[in-house]
Image (tube, rainbow, N blue to C red):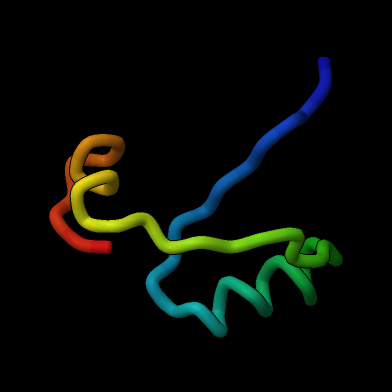
Length: 48
């Protein structure tokens, strides 16, 4: 089995960066913010 993707949703941007970097020892490859329409379509939430 090959792990290809992992995602964790945390509202505090600094907290999530620290988690990935300090605990998991991973570096950020890319980040993005979904616009409201796409966030609603994918996750059913009405905010970006």
